[in-house]
Length: 257
Image (cartoon, rainbow, N blue to C red; front, side):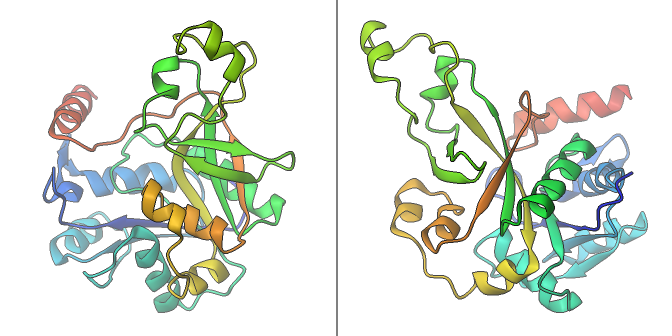
């Protein structure tokens, strides 16, 4: 349990291109959204809320005594949904709100705590997570988001491109089949903690040009001068559920528990 004061919001949009009704996916007899909330509870947050646009999802959460509230169906991002929760609940600007994705039933509670603590101690507007990249295939994969950090631990930039680029090493390696020793390449993990003051301001922020081209929502905050502090972890956390294959893998895992 953590003595740190923070709240958790789990956005749970019912519609999904690849997995419609994903929050209700049965994992060992419980809906996935409940499995996520049960893991989140272990982090010791003051409050945990499922934020959904679907009555079935709310009912499924409440059936297992997980607090849930209805949010608008037209939110373009999960961050917008969090902002509505802040408004509905009347949280003060200094409230720390951790956004736990609703498709990560294996999320490590310690990482949730670490992210909340990173925000509290850094004084930043947002905190997030990254881990070292050790494989060249991941470094050059545009689906793996990279982050470059400043000396103070704040993010300088996020990109799908291979950054930072080890020019001389990759030239010698004829394109880069390996990474150099001590290479400061980090993969961004999409777990965020926000100050409620940022979430209240978010809807009024214009979309950044970099955000449009990279398709990375966090670049909007950097574009407008907000600080994003990065907590470093040793390795990638457990994978979530994005595809039907992921869903089947997770079902089998929980069936064995």
